[in-house]
Image (cartoon, rainbow, N blue to C red):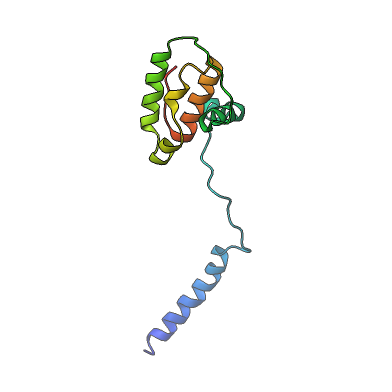
Length: 123
C-alpha cells in the first residue's frame, strides 16, 4: 500500500488542476431544443390555421355553396374523417361539410388537417 501512495498522490495532483480547467464556471443551461425550420412552407400560417380550426370545430357559420362536385368533396372528407384519431372522429362530422365550403375555406380546412392531424386533403 505504501508503494501506491506516492502514485495516487501524484495522480491527484495532476487531476485536480485539469479538473478545474475542464469544469465550467457558473450554472449555464442551454435553451430547449428547437427543430430547424426547413424553408418557407414550414412556417405556420396562423390566419389560415385559425379559419380551418373554426371550420373543424363548427364555430364558423357556413352557408350552402354548390360550387363544384359535392359528391367528390364528400368522398374526400369521408376519407379524412376515417383518418382522424378516434376521439376527434366522435366530435366532428367532416362529410357533412360537403357543399358548404368555398375554395378559400376548403384550403383552410386542408391546412388545419395537415398541421394538426397530419392528414393530407387533396384539392
